[in-house]
Amino acid sequence: MSGLDTIAALATPAGAGALAVVRVSGPGALQIAGRVFRGRRSLPESAPGCVQRGRVEQDGAVLDEVLLTVFRAPRSYTGEDLVEISGHGGSVVAAAVLRAVLAAGAHPAPPGEFTRRAFLNGKMDLTQAEAVMDLIAARGEASARAAAGQLEGRLGRAVEALRGDAITAVAHLEAFIDFPEEGIDAEGGRALLERVDRLHGAVAHLLSTADEGRMLREGVRLVIHGEPNAGKSSLLNLLVGYDRAMVSEIPGTTRDTIEESLTLRGIPFRVVDTAGLRESSDPLELEGMRRTRAELELADVSLRVVDVTAQAEAARPNAREIRVLNKIDLRPEWVPGADEVAMCCLDGRGLEDLVAAVIARTDLSTLDRCGEVIAVNERHRHCLAAAQNYLGEARRSLQRADPPELTALELRSALAAIGEITGAVETEDVLDKIFGSFCIGK
View 1 (cartoon, helix red, strand yellow):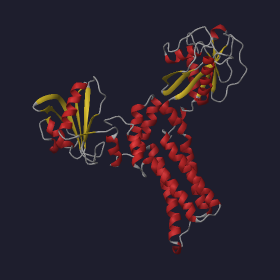
View 2 (cartoon, rainbow, N blue to C red):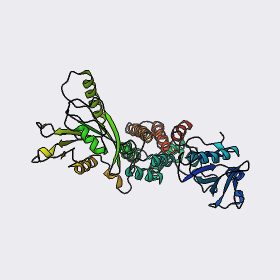
View 3 (cartoon, rainbow, N blue to C red):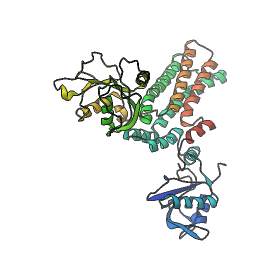
View 4 (cartoon, rainbow, N blue to C red):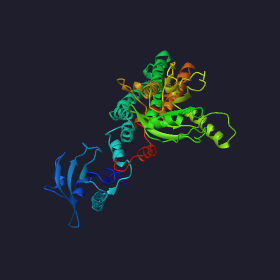
């Protein structure tokens, strides 16, 4: 499909609803829409932002009564002429309108094509384009706020500032290499080393937010573990709000992991209930315990459920662990210590205290800090890690007093890795991977 093709797609979810929107974008958007739309005035003569009421017709038959909005290039989402046809919701009528537009000369839009064109036409950088899908897929208020900040350009501006510093360093060093007779200062020695150190530190700061980004996108991995019959499954049911896991007095009932998604105070979580840990010769129970240990290795936060009516464990929690002292209704005199929460999973007593302790342990409370930047996906992390490695090599090259050409090579590589984040340096396969994950119509 040529970049000059006019594309069309349904921009709202399929199925019953109040409205369905068919989006048309490209150089022929107004002409193609005009072939099926009957309103008071000709679409090519419509002013930007004009909204008309009319009908969509095909072969003389009325398909729907609609509102049609015109957006003129470059002041549109894609940067091209764009038309949105808002009709009645419902899969049959929306599909009929879309078929009419395609029959009039538009091409079906592949996933992400509208946002891809917005990027190619300079309406947004790659971090903002990715934020569009992150905002749509947000699983909690914190995820949505982070995506909105990235869509507004917060991460892009931080990356472009890094890129500007890297360009300055490369340009100065290469000018010295190419024109030695001009007497240009090589910004060598300590001055260039300090610039590289600043770049390295700024990249490291962005990299340090990658775990926060992963948790916002995928959910904080919260693993429930402990001995059999301590109340692990009861705790899972209490957190999700319904009987997700079977509860039994028979030890070893849970043989496999059970995972559920939920939101606590605007933050997405993936809660995993695991098999109880104890001595056993049962092959199935042993496999369940192996999976429990594997889940604990991946946990962002773990909840170690302890039955306070049994002999209390003396082991102290690790840095990611909170001890949940269950059945506190039977031992009301028990006073929880640091990193411990007293609970009764049957009646919900202590649940708010547990939620507060979990939220505090996630380290995501910093999201509301003014100016906080979140590197929200794996692609950003990969680019930043590559840039960090190249800057480290440039630093070592300067310390060894290598020829300036070697240092410049590492700095150029760092510059390319940084530029790939926003799309200042782009490759077709990167764009295909990003926009291929979008929904059709966006």
